[in-house]
Amino acid sequence: MGFGERARRVRDERLAHGSRVAALCSCVSLYHPIGHRATLSFLEELAGPYQRHEKALLRALETLEASRAVWRAEVTGHKNARLKEKRLGRRVPSGEGPPPGRMGGHWYATVPALPGRAAVHALKLWERDHGPEFADDETRSLVRECIATGGRLTGERLDVVLARRAGDARWPMTLIASAVDTSP
Image (cartoon, rainbow, N blue to C red; front, side, top):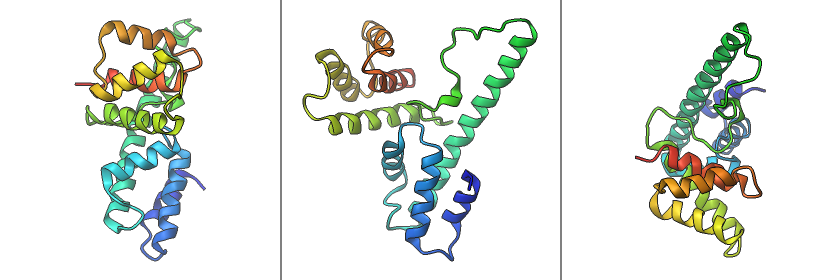
């Protein structure tokens, strides 16, 4: 069953509310831009307690579908750009970073502040899950600084984040980079 069919089950008023919530969780298992648990938690922050309220459940689904639509448009744009590059003989992708099809650590949205909020939200969950001694000193410092500032880091600190994205702390550094890239 694909995303669309699962989304239809979320909207199906004939189903019990718990089954509809499970269908939303299934949608998130297919599209989870900031991780499965963080995506569900962020949807609850945006839409309200969808586990108990009908309108919140539908708002959560709409929010997820809107993000997925932006992501799909970016994937299609990237694929089209790569096809053009290949036709011109450029077989090695340009250094733009990973293609948007990877979904790793970035909430796709048309609302400018939403990706940064999502990244900071995911960082808070990541920090909470890993306890007070969750990583090396520099990673802890960067995560806490990003959370405290809402994603506004100095250029020098961002350079440290970008340099560390390939190391052991790849996931939190990816979330920080997403928060910083989209901060006002």
